[in-house]
Structure formats: structure tokens, C-alpha cells
Length: 265
Image 1 (spheres, rainbow, N blue to C red):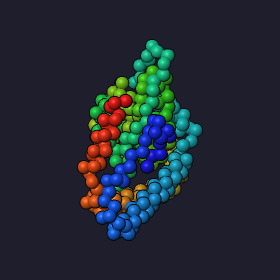
Image 2: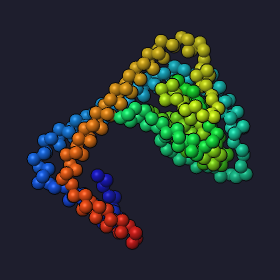
Image 3: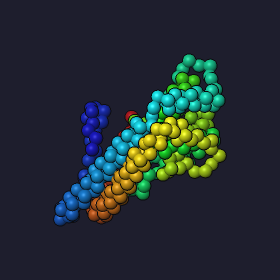
């Protein structure tokens, strides 16, 4: 439920509880309570697993992200900007929207690469085994916006404070992370292998630690997906209990009345 800030003056309450057959649901209350508790518990477990996986991935990045690597990525970003981003005769900076292009679902991690392909015909695929794409993308975003172009920054669903993809629809240009677990489909992409930018000696010395991090984070993600699948099944079961005892005709009438009210403002 969302509490109105200015009830009566700006917003009002809508009680959808009137659509329930309370007498029919009363004998089912324990079954409903058990189902509610079960699926909420599955969600909580999934979030704990995803948070743990994200922490391990952050540790992996911390090992590899040296000053030398940061300088390499900054140089690469400058080269891409000079080649791909025409300067505009404007002092106004572009705007940035945030949109998720991927998610961790009950069916596993997904990324809607087709959405990017539909908007952009120039694609950079960033081969990225260690989650370093953000360091390149944040520099590209700064250059793109300062040149006056709008951009769509797509957060990493595992770490929303980090960027996984960057779209510039005005230029038909996209930069898409392509991890081994969810690779960007083979298209006419220009590929940048971020893995090769890491210091070779650091990679060699840290290989056991990185291998462990990759294995454990993958296992935690799999466990989260399993918990989400269980939560989905329990939620579907909950709907099957409620649906026979909901007056959907009344629900539609309430929706129509609200829509009519909105149109009269």
C-alpha cells in the first residue's frame, strides 16, 4: 500500500479489499498465512544470496582494479569518444536516464540485448569476466553527456550502483557488457576485451582467488534463482486460492471510475 501525502486534497485511498469475498476466504486463512510466509521467506533468502554474490564480485574487482588498469581504461575511453562522439555546438549537457536492461529472475539471469539492438546499430560488446565494464562506461558517459547527447545508463542488477550497459539512441550507439555467463549474441559488434587490460602479473598471482570468487558467486546466484523459482510457485499458488473469491467485475468498475475521474481533472 502507498500512503498518500495529501489525502483528500491531492490523493485518495482506493480500497480494493471490497473486491474480496471475506466470508469465503475466512476458512482458508491458515492456508493463506502459510503461503504468504513461505514465499516471503524465499524472497528474503534469494536477496541474501544475491547480496553475498555481489560482495564476492566486488572483492574480485578490488583485486584487479589497479591505478594502471584505471589509466588504461581512461585512455581507451578517450579514444572511443574521439572516434564515435561528434562534438556539438552547444553548451548544454545531455540528460541521463537510468533503465535496467537485465535482471535476475526465477528463470535465471537475463539481459534484453534485443532492446539495445532495436535502438542502436553500432554496438560495442565488452568482454568482461571480472566486472570491470563500469570503469570504462562511467568515463564514456561523462564524455557523451558533456558533448550534449542524452544517454541511457543501465545499472548492473547485481550491483545497481555500477553500470553494466550504456546506450546513446541519438547516435545509434551502444556499449554492452558481455560476461561469459550471459554473452552478448553474435551480431556485427565491435568487441573490446576488457579482460586483457588487467595486469598479467596480478592475474597470475590472484588466479586461485579469482577462480574461487567466480565459483562461489555463480553458486550463490544459482541458489538465489532457485529460491526465486520457489517464491514464484508459492505466489502462483496464492493467486489460485484468492482468484475464485475475487469480484473482478467490481475491480474493473473501480478502475474505470478512477480513470474517468483522472480524465476530468
